[in-house]
Structures are given as structure tokens and as C-alpha cells.
Amino acid sequence: MRFIRGTRAFSRQAASRLSRLSIVLALGASALLCGVGPAHAAKDPLPADIPNYQAALDAVKSTAVRNTVCRFLSAPLPTGGGTATAKPIPDKADPCEGLPAFTIKDPVALNEITPGFVAGTARPIATEAIKLTQLVSSLSATVNGRNVTVLLAPTTGGGWHLAAVRDGDDDAVQASKATVGTLVFSEPQIRGWYQLKLTTVEPLNDQARQGLGGQPSVSLADYQNLVKARYSDKQPGSDYDTKGLSSGYGPGHPAGRQASTTPLIVGGSGAALALAGGALVIRRRRAASH
Image (cartoon, rainbow, N blue to C red; front, side, top):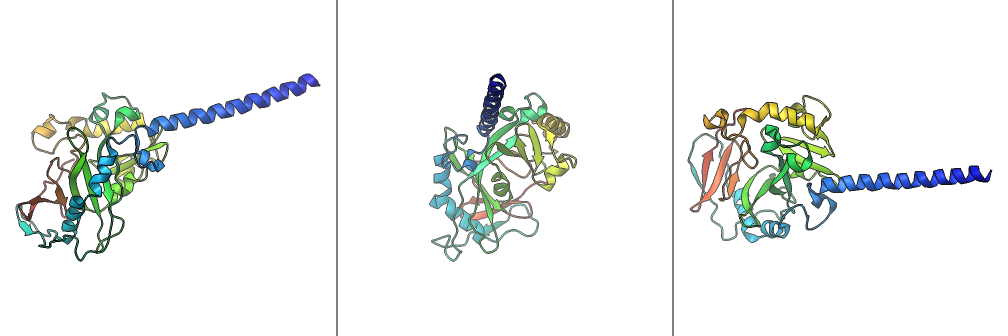
């Protein structure tokens, strides 16, 4: 009887150790995934995965960025055609005068699939498939019925700078859905947003659901096959790119987004408004081909 009791006690101890080991392994896997995902979701004021995050905070809290957002909210948006029409910026000493109070939220990571992942040259693992390209912020409240997205781009040599302001806050809303142990990323050509849980990809919006062919989830390897079929012939330098059919495919240059060190104010109807010489110069963007 003593032998039997001892065996049962040993079994209980072994089971307890295995259970603790499983928890440690699960937490370790989550921590590894979080190493490439928005650690800001864990309420860390300085996410380790976002380099120079304090500089990003300083940028979105700066008077210059706030004034740019106020100018955007005060400026009339284009409604018709045209390719180089100028609209005057409201002439106010304080660009935010007369606007409801608002703050710009702390920026979160905007992750995108990498060209290597699309081409099939990168392995279907988080560290090679997904890359941080920009940071996005939205407003704490709607202003005159509108919300905006503030985009920050990395500055050469370190830091972050204002890259664009545009109508709507979908990017910031979607990017903020990352949690501890998950990674949120976009497929910018179709405006699809996905959540990666270890090696499982799940859609977060209608475009992503269509991108997965209506499936509730796929493996990261299967998702790679899908995007490779969609874009492998549309990489920079391809006929699709060089013949002017589109801007090609690459991180930071998706359809509808422009790469520039000049802050852009992007409004509705496919127009990009650039601050230039005291006026908002409206440039009609070319529709993307798919």
C-alpha cells in the first residue's frame, strides 16, 4: 500500500511539473512573438519592439504635429477633379482656434508583410514575414464629426517624423487590436488586416476575409502561398512596376500611400494635400491597378 501511495504521489508531482512546464513554454512562445509585435499592447510606455519610441511620443505630442492636424481639420477637402488645384490654409495665428479639444493618442506599430515573404524567399515565420514600417495614431475624440490618422515614418539616423495626416482612423483602430502573444499586420494592397497567433493567420476585416477566400484562419505558410500568387509578379522592377501599371509592391509604398519626407495631408476622393508655400496643394493620386 505504501508503494501504491508513493506511486500516486509521484504521478501527481510529475503531472504538476509537466503542467508548469507547459505554461512556461506557452509563455515563452508568446514572449518570442511579442518580440516582433506591438509590445505597447502590454501597457509598456516604451515598447521595446519600436525603436526610439520616446521620439515617436515626442513627435505626436509636439505643437508642430498638432497644428498640422488642426490645419487639416480646418481645410476644405477637394470634392471634384483637377490635378494641381491650390486651396488656402485658414489664416489663423492659432491653427487649432475654434476646434473642439482633442489629443493625439500614443502611436502604435503599423506592421506589413515583407517583400521577401511575398516573393517566397523569406521563411513563413513572424520575424521574416512581418516588418514594422510606420507608426499610426488617431485622435482621442472626433472633431466636427471627423477623425484622422497621423502617420510617422522613421527618420534616417534614428527617430520618427510626421509623414502624413489623412481622414479616417481605421489603420490605428486595427493596429491597436494587437494583444500580448499576438501580432497585427496589414496586407496594404487590399487594405486587409490580420492577426497572427503563433503561426495561425486570422482576418480582422472584410478585405482580409476576402483575401483568405472566406476561410476563418490559415497557417502562415498557406497565407504566404496566397500573397505570393497575388503579388509575386508585381514586385519592384517587374513588368507590372516598370510599365507603370502600379507603384509595384513594397513595404511603405502600398497602393494609395506615397513615400516622402514632406508631410502629406491625405483627404477623401483619392487626393493628397501637401503643405507647400502656405497653401494646400491638391494632387490627384493615380488609382491602383491590381
